[in-house]
Image (tube, rainbow, N blue to C red; front, side, top):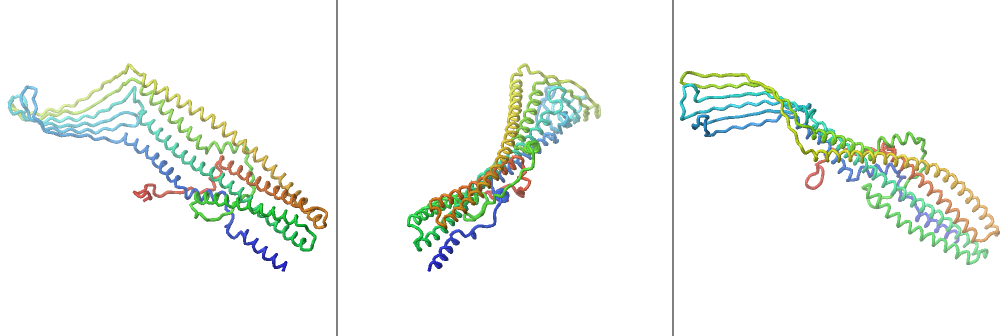
Length: 486
């Protein structure tokens, strides 16, 4: 009868703590990969990067050919004060070069018919055409086409900022997963620890009941074990509720079903890289430092543009063309064709440059602020890496000490159990030693989790974690009216 009761107890225990509900251990990198594949905000960031990449294409239109044309019919007054009917058409083709110079081609044709003036020396009707090829080269303001050149640099800087913001979002997500995953690992370790404690208490309870049936144990021993077991079961239920909440949060981020189970993996990692190599890696991939570098590029472009805006206007203008007039007069046909050309300088000066000076000063302040932020970021980066390395080193030493403590507690409990079976110690001390062993085992597991969290943080800081993650590729970033990409 006693054996049957024990078998039933063990069956219930196995059902209660059966691991079948858990899948294979899920590592931090696997969780992060699933979150990256699912997280909607990452696609929004990709859209912003794609949008920023189009700014250079918009600037390219500044160097495209521009066509203007007009035509009309009018009743006007001639130079003789008489009425004249005019039909004319004009067209111009112009383009700004990367050097800042502008080339243009202008053509026009006009036909005049004076209905009231008949002069033997003037053709009537007459047709006049003109063609001009012009070239304007800025020597002062606009020399070198700073609007275009600095616009390209600014567009590139904005693109780099959007990329850095996307990388920062990835880091933010990875850091959030570190905290959630570490919390899940800690909670899992607590659940496993209390399970082991419950198993020991149930074995102790069965043993004491056997002794009580033989008259070798007192009721107070049974009550002590029962109280301890109920306390442990209550603690397990509380941890189970916390686990459900944390599990739902992680499943939500991964896009998994709410009730999907997983088992955290928190094996020990080793750090072999030194401070110098880690600091170099962290600098090269830091989103914040890349943002500052882009801000410096924007500030430099603004400074160059504002300095150019302060310059006086001085343009060299050259043109060559043809003038042609044809028509019939009383004295015969007239056909005049003349080649024309010229060169001139155009100068302009603004006496009040306070607006340009203010904008220049603001751009210089922006640059100074970016440099200050860069120094602060580098200092913070050095401190963070040094701090994590120191914490990992101390954590590894603590882990070794906890392992020794667990071994000591196990030996102490084993010796106490031998004395208990021979009646040389009481239940109070045995339960106390079991509690101390559970506490030592839990501290060991929590130290492993904390050490793992430090390793993941260092891996994120150096960018090593992203070498193991496959970034999503979005074939189509344009959503339709329903919000679904098409």
